Amino acid sequence: MKVSLTTTTTWWLLLSLSCYQLACYANQIDNLNRLINSKKSRNPQRTEPWTDQSKVRNVMSPVDIGPQEGMMEADKIKTLPGQPEGVDFDQYAGYLTVDPKAGRALFYYFVESPQSSSSKPLVLWLNG
View 1 (cartoon, rainbow, N blue to C red):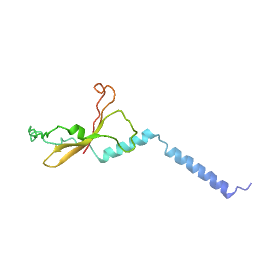
View 2 (cartoon, rainbow, N blue to C red):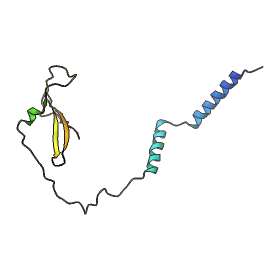
View 3 (cartoon, helix red, strand yellow):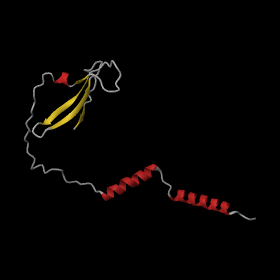
């Protein structure tokens, strides 16, 4: 009985793939644990504190609060691109000055809840 070359090649390929699968048998948890442990061994945790607490001074930085009259209405957004007409909530966006001398500010976007806003949780998005 003569066996063709393609049949022999196919059997060798299947045998090789099944051996490879058995040798590499691991589930995702094993692979994830192996990855985490390899990163831990290369980058050991640093246990020293970020700052020397004896050098930290308890000095409060001055807070600069500018005039607030009309600021809420100036930051109110009428509509956003792609937003449906007639939304029943107010939305505001603007900048909160953090350090006026350095010119640092945080961008914020705030949306009021249309129903019972006093009992709804507040989510304020700040991006600096």
